[in-house]
Length: 124
Image (cartoon, rainbow, N blue to C red; front, side):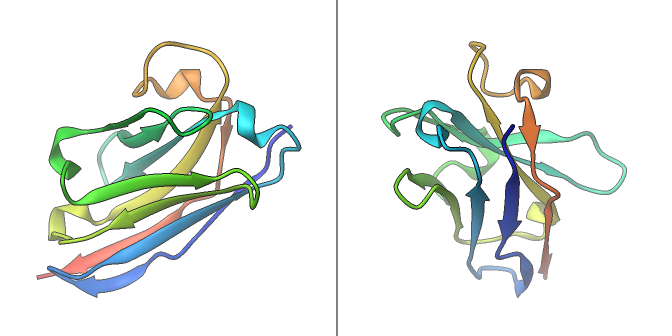
């Protein structure tokens, strides 16, 4: 069982930055690949960024490439999402999730554990 708790959300103006954190409870955290997803009102949950176990591989959805950076600290059992140059369309609830199996970054059903989400609001 893995418990995930996100923090760091808030309200910022367009062009601003936020850093989201996800704290994990799993003793074997380092063996999980981690992902960040987001869900805006009336829209499906979408993949934002992912990082492999060990941190050697990352993946981003096209709309955030060059603006967002995912990273992990396996000692502290934390995953981060640094978000720069934020846009109003980045407004959503952001979730972190973990998985051990599967070949796709974006398939939500491959992620076994999810956090409760943190709200990010970007105003123009």
